Image: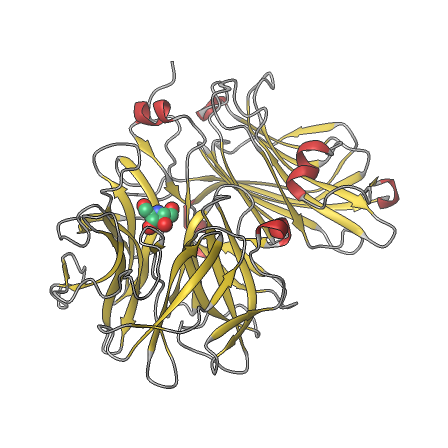
Amino acid sequence: IIPNHTYRPSFHFLPSKNWMNDPNGPMRYKGMYHLFYQHNPKAAVWNTAIEWGHSISKDLVNWFPLQPALTPNQPYDIKGCWSGSITILPNQKPFILYTGIDHNNHQTQNLAIPKNLSDPLLREWVKLPNNPLMKPTLGNKINVTSFRDPTTAWLGHDGFWRVIVGSQENEKGIAILYKSKDFLHWIKAKHPLNSAKKSGMWECPDFYPVSTKGKIGIETSVDGPQVRHVLKVSLYDTSHDYYLIGTYDTTKDVFVPDEKGFDKDELYLVQRYDYGKFYASKTFYDGAKKRRVLWGWINESSVQQDDEKKAWSGIQAIPRTVWLHESGKQLIQWPIAEIEKLRGHHVKLHSKVLKPGTLLQVSGVTPAQADVEISFQVSKLENAQELNPSWKLDPQILCSQKAKGGFGLLVLASKGMQEYTSVFFMIFKTNKKYVVVMCSDQSRSSLNHKNDLTTYGAFVNVDPAHEELSLRILIDQSVVESFGGKGKACITSRVYPTLAINDKAHLHAFNNGTLHVKITRLSAWSMKKAKVN
Ligand code: DQQ
């Protein structure tokens, strides 16, 4: 019998109990990080009457819980305080904009401010008497049940604040743009910031500038010649977060993406933050460290009955620093440096050849709670599998249907290999180049087949003929968070082994393919437990 706490992560953010979904209003304020989150304090399942849980931290690793910031208690949010964001106005005033579900089940946007700005923890929040500030009316033709999740606002040169709200008109997904001089009176702009004909509801949009000059993050209102913009939407129909890089045309107040938009037919070509479980994400600008930090919700892969038994459901991914790759074509994500404080006992090796068919056990660290970094060098690439031109270029399909061999790490493996989760690379050749795919395969992760055992995949834009292939995995009981190509591709999985738990789990490197693979470096650390809520 597996005790209830077995799958509970030790260094990921989650409330002390019950259901959590989206991260809300993350910010750094007066030396303290704040995270709000969608919380059902009564059960381990979602409920419309959800509230804003609130925790604070000095380091984004250890968290202290506070009282809920927003609970449903007004006519305009009586059926739920749904997702939203914080904007820090001049004079250090943080404003929450959030979606309320009113007594008619209509969605409205509302403002809340700290009750007492001299409380450094910002424990109490008050809702403004002017609420709701934005609502669907007969005149504005907004869909009453598809109008939610306001972003952090940005200030234009004309002195108007701007915010987008996710919506849909039939099949068309929309980022409705609103403008305001005083943050209280908001006018809907004539044109949306962006839309896509066939994409369904856009939840939790995020819109922010990124620098073309390195890793440095930029405050949300900053624009200029060395700035590009990112629009992210969470597509309700697929449960994934997709992003586009493009130009924010400030004269027309529209976002012009470099590539095709979020239309459903070609969604598999649109980039994602994460190709596994990661949804309703949101970034904030951390001025103290001049970085942009990304939070995202990771749901469970278990059935509801099992969630109720363990009495919690949902975690947040380790916050990631996010920046534009020097190619300008994709974002790079990397776990915030602070998480490395939890690294304990360290084992390493280098220059180890893994012949085809080799399994190499990595011992000396706690395999169910570890941080592992490995780099591979591949030779004799001409032996790589051909990429058949008739195959659909969907990495998830390549991983689940075309995977022959591969090399990488086997995590949370049982002694007799009845259970394991493999995270690995596959290299395909075409007549012009090599294509690298990273896979996270849960099909053998648990003998409990009630869990979701999907195989995930992502392309990694590296050239294996000239570059090493690197992989970092954060393993935390039931979480496997993988970063390929130094943050070019991320895949997060949730697995619930029945044998490979705690000290019964094992960690291995493997080469199951036909290629000649050398581990150039491997470092693994046992991870300490963080103080989380
Ligand atoms: N979760 C919230 C909504 C949002 C959805 C409700 C995304 O505001 O659209 O809990 O997960």
